Image (cartoon, rainbow, N blue to C red; front, top):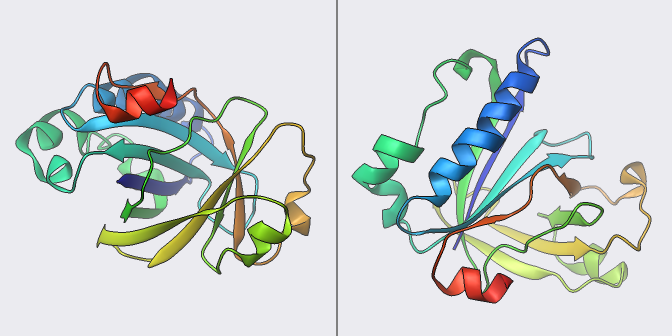
Length: 181
């Protein structure tokens, strides 16, 4: 399953410090939890969506309901909570772990269907929302290789373009680690 967290941040003064916290403390804390397999952060290049996206591969919904998650992984944003806007969380059922994107590659998400991604020569895969906000109910995800140039402003409506902010972190064991190797 892919757990997504999306948000924007409204305080330019503390944004770099918040990004350091999220990338250097929050992601490693999450990946250390039972049931978390991969974690990676992205920044939107599109203008009509939340600025930040985190993709986590997890085993099942119970991971997010566990005491361990509440204690070590969930929340921990009290210091920055007043500046976090457009915050959305979803859990998507999918046949594969979240892709590991290297710097220079791009992630595309579509809530309008796979056709625009197929027209770009990409191979999108379907994400079905099964828990949390469940909106959008479906998304299609595709990876744009670093060899392709793209203008974010030229993308069809409903297609969001992201660039990696971090490398993908992986747990020490489990199917996602083996699939991403």
